[in-house]
Length: 289
Image (cartoon, rainbow, N blue to C red; front, side):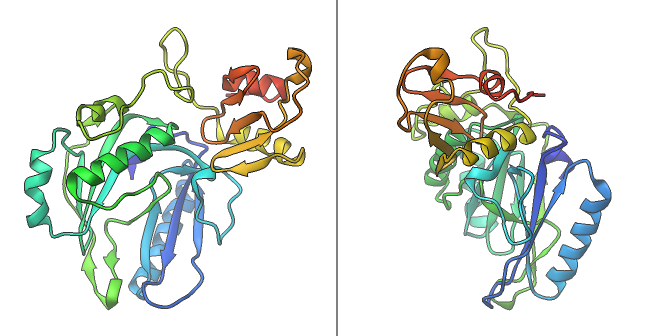
């Protein structure tokens, strides 16, 4: 966890979840701010206790925004950033290892999950470009014959027991080299991956080429709350409605021509064009850290 989340925003939230493998029971989660070490240790201790009683122990690789309840795990609309690329292969480690060794981008961590293999590629910096992450996940799953995972997927916790079908197989790290860190574009070398455009509208880079930090989750939540209060509607990770900057830009388009991306903090209007996070926050007089 230290290796995965050391570069994530300290005020973002890690989600830990207990899921019963056979019985149709409610799925409880705890959402812990990364800086709250005491709460994190307590949540992990409780999760291992539940695991010993037969519940599966899971964690969300992507950081979540604040405000989620005990009975929410967080979907794509709630994600803030993700520190790694992942895939899940439902085969034994021996059978899949030749494919792993031949893959052009070596994983930072190989985990024996109890009934399969998890692969993790640590990113140099956490990203909020979730469309690119999902595209990469899809390409890697095809290449390695694994399952397609979205950025919102929960993973089985290493150090726990895989209780699927009443089993007690350990989920454990097989090997790791956390010095292996990658940029999203490093995965575009594989020919079956969709092309990753360097100049995506949602990419967090300024015109000068320097990296622009994603806005903090509290800023995104505040802007989203204001838009929801104005009647904006959800569509995937976007909130859609009339352009809030219409008066300044002197266009009378009161249709749902504007979208606010709750994953990146960017806005986009069909008339005004792309609005960077600092522009969106300025419109609503919200400070971006």
